[in-house]
Length: 260
Image 1 (tube, rainbow, N blue to C red):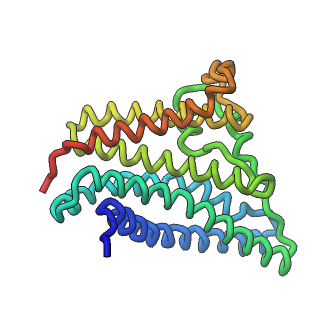
Image 2: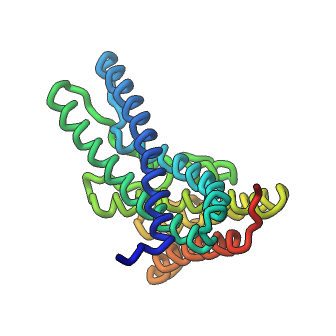
């Protein structure tokens, strides 16, 4: 029987390992959400649903996973896995994780809302994540915070497929950025690594803006000039940013020295 390619083995191993971490993260978020629901029932106030909570926190979780994945490289190289197979396997695993987390979060949220609305009078808050962008002061710090925390959002109730796609793109970008920054520090000195953090922030804000424009969502005033771009290049430009980021990660990891 033909053995599966090495990079597929890497992808499988990394995916299941990181998915187990994701289950831990989702479980913690569910426990926090249940606590908030109980508190809201006692106080008679509304509460955010589980999906929205995971939508916000999932970015940071995936960013951390991207950072940590770089430190798997010595293990794989020591076991005869090439840097190419490590890269391809990690990329496939990150795509799979980015797809399945939104689906799981959406499913849990649907069950949660069904149960709660049938046993109590608790109301769930209407998501206003996109409108917050209009309330943030127009300065570079505010822009960074908005791009890092308040990513473009689509309500699953309005368009489930589009909501899942946007959620997946958001967390996939964060995974890549974590990997990108971690690889830069692994390969270069600290000062150079700090420069890569700046590049990552610029990439994040550009990607955030292009995605907002493609969805017809509010855009930060600083980047409003991009709204004049022809509609035919917005989505291709968004995916070009992702491809360039992937290409740079490949370059960073291609001949990187292994620290034993």
